[in-house]
Length: 378
Image (cartoon, rainbow, N blue to C red; front, side, top):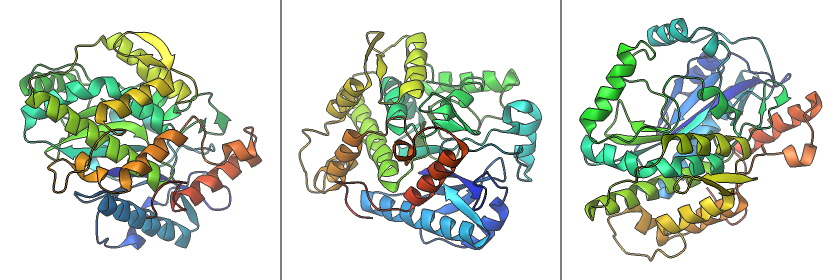
């Protein structure tokens, strides 16, 4: 699992380009790695391969704490937000050959692009299976986004959206829900076409909300904003794992992923980014507006959260989760809902500069704070 974070000045709360200084102070981690991103205002923690939820929770908590401590050492705060809450000068990029090619291609599109996401990798047997799993995931990606929205403020203003990160990401070529692919060869051909058209820098780059990882034997789901808390990050991982497990089970019984209208799916993504769970969603099967919470309930039924039974030594992580407190923790997070509000927004209200500083402080505190009610401690 990969989590991206912003670095902000501890005094002004504006994004600050201290990635190199922070990464140099983190050192080695017992689980996972830290990396830089396109801009020097961002850092990333990537967990190791985890087979248990408590293992993932421990790694995410440890990575956040080490990064937050290193940030404090250089006068910064680690902020888990999908977009910079306060404005500032366009940030410098990290010196990297590939980042240089990205900057040259997208120019002003990435000059101030400091959005942060949460990416979940799930292992699959092979590339053909991975593409078939992608087809099953397509209708659920907007709901994963709606559960995660964590960027209502961006560059000093209230955007009116739950996820401004998704609005900014939608400007890139080939963004959104991936097409339905008949085979791994068809998937590869589509990526090759984007490269040949000159709109992505290489085969390792695409902006789909779920894709085959260019580096690992996994399906990579990239729908979510960076989570404000470890609990919400873990919930994204558990739900994604459960969706992949359900897809694999359906494929084993000969059920392929549904063939859904791409325009309806695009409408579902936009609606999820606009409202989160705080309003309507779009039913991707019927192409109609429904309460977003109805889609969350459908997701829960689909993966068996309300009825799954414990199985000792079961092959699927979803089944193993059912034996412990983690799945009830996911239920608690889903019931609380990410909504369209950053932590602290309900308390401070409005979007004046003082209030936005309070939002940044609340996010920084939530990053390594206490578990949400009903969830197990880290």
